[in-house]
Image (cartoon, rainbow, N blue to C red; front, side, top):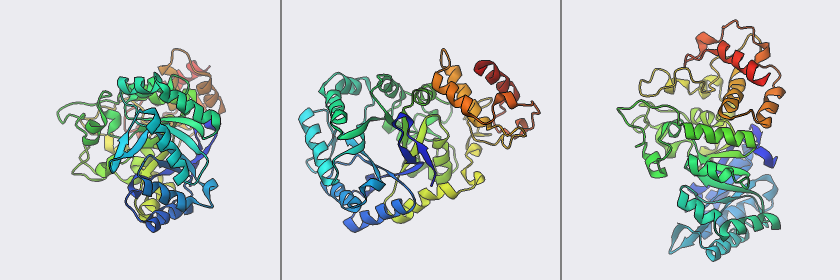
Length: 382
């Protein structure tokens, strides 16, 4: 397993984590088998948004005696009512459900308290202009959550939330299709890929790129949901690209976005956990997602670096995608953020080491003028 630092939290998190939603309705033994497999594979991060009592209790029982081995992301604002899940902004309901979660998970705290599902201006106001945000802040002050998070599917609302400075961790829906969706598309439009028109030419959504860059620059760690789009991207008949992607391709795409720390894959069995964790032993060729975009007339990527790594190896040992990721973050800001400049300075080899041999350029599937961009990086980073 590979581990990354979750933004400014300082937590060391497995790059592939466990989304627990598919454990609902499973027996206690089945839940334990999934948790056992996750821990055996080195996963140390789990998302628990489900308010259903049995699944919370089953997860708590499975983690009993080894709580310290798993970082728990628990949600604020989900309740179980009339036999089903419901999102709520009612303060009394929110408090009762959160305390129930702690009790059933057999823990005194969760590592990340995730304000649940904030996707619109109305959602934002219902959280940040009410007692809900004050309650969330009080949980952090009391140590019932170590860090504050927020989940969203909308880049503009998510950016507004992280710009408050209160959010340490963002849970966001990222995959190769969603990044080409209209940024105003709601989650239902995203899930059906209906924001990708069959007769249109689609470019990477600028609002999403801005969000990822801001989080990277400000140390807000991103954990990814919907990386497989509910499995649709794994099926050629449902994929908007007309071809099936693999699990390693989907995970790698998300992990190569700025700011991303971990991809949380929903698993209902030990074998599915092992399939997700196998990303870490996959070859570069197995992880490569560039073929999904290159040559697709509906997807416009010409001249844009997608950080796929086809340009490597570099004769001067430069990690070209890393340099260009930081360059893009600097270009998106009015002035280069200190954190971005610091990351650039920490690179063992950077644009100053480029000898402009251009051996990398024929390898790029997207026609990026690499030598020119290296020159630009030298000017910007001094």
